[in-house]
Every structure is written in C-alpha cells, then in structure tokens.
Image (cartoon, rainbow, N blue to C red; front, side, top):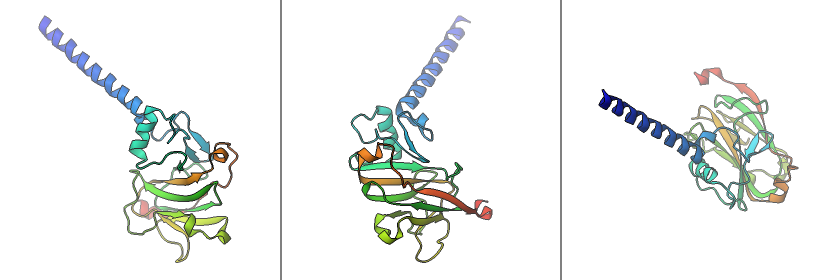
Length: 204
C-alpha cells in the first residue's frame, strides 16, 4: 500500500511539474498574449502596434511573439507595423464580406497594407491581390479607397482579395517612419474599414 501511495505521489509531482513548466513557458514565450492587447500596446483607433517591436528594449516575450507572428520583421527605425482584425464598428473580419478601406498619407517614406488569413499567412488564392501600397496610389487619389473582399469590384479599382481565407486581419507597414510623429499620438489618416455587404452563401 505504501509503495502504491509513493507511486501516486510521484506521478502527481511529475504531472504538476509538467503543468507548471508548460504554463511558465507559455507565459514567457508570449503565446498567451496572441489576439489580445499585450502590455505596451499602442492603439490608434482599431490599428494596433507596439513601439517596443524592433527596439533594444523589447522583452523576451515580445521577441518570441515577433519570431512566431512577424517573420523578417525589421528594426523600429526601418519599419513600424500596425495590425487590425475588426472593422470600424468593432466586428470581426470575415472573408465572405466586402469592405471599403479608405486612407490618406502616412508619416513614412513608403507604406503597404497586406491581408493575412486566420493562420497568419497570405490567403491561398491566385488573385495576385494580397496588398496595396504607395506605389499604386497616385497623388490625385488622396484620400484613396480600396475594396477588401472576395471579388474585384472593377478592372481598375484598388483591391485586396479575401478569397481563400475564412477570417483575416490587415497589416499596415510604414517604412522609414517618422517615429516622433507616430509616437506623439497626434497622427491622423490611418485607414478606416467600412463593412459594405456579406455573402452568406460563401460562408457555408
């Protein structure tokens, strides 16, 4: 009986150690913060970033999150990354819906907006419309507009395709950013995202 009790106690200690170890690794890796506002997060409307990304002050947890979710991320002086996963009304983004993305100039030398699917990869389609960028927008179009949805609205319209995804988020990259202005919380012109319609047949 004593031997059996010793075995049970030892087993409980092993399981407890595993749970504690796994929980600690989860916390320190930052995995438990994915999809939530991590400490230090800066929010501009519904676009979110963390100015510690790419800086010397980035914590181990933040570096781990970037390694998993932000492959090939540049230093903060080279690029700042903003992400949004809701529309202007705070609703989740779905690939069977169509949205209007509208914006204007940014305090940076170059910019792009790219769509990523629910697995944080480019959507699996052959539309060649994963993003838009500054080079495709003429000065006369300011403020510019683009459609985000499963179908191109017109042959010459700006379009980011959601085909091949289920849910998605958008990443705004600002290259060679004017950090002083961005960090002053006085920047305007970040893109709005208005829900236009949803095709429920595509969601089934």
